[in-house]
Length: 61
Ligand SMILES: [Ca+2]
View 1 (tube, rainbow, N blue to C red):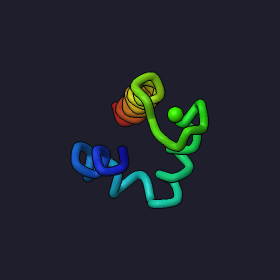
View 2: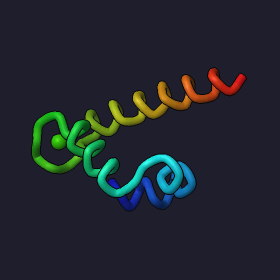
View 3: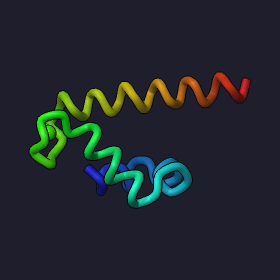
View 4: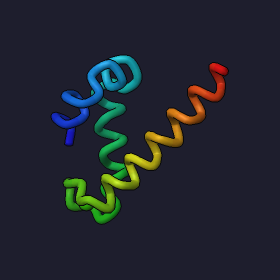
């Protein structure tokens, strides 16, 4: 998951999320506490990311 983030969203991760923030994010997303993100948990992450990006760009407009 972390590798995916760093590969797909390097600028986003580097600029917005530090290591501890990423760990906290992972913990928050891991709804069933198995320390991995299944598809449903990942879908929640995508929805949150989309929401954050939407808010971010709306504030810039
Ligand atoms: Ca999980």
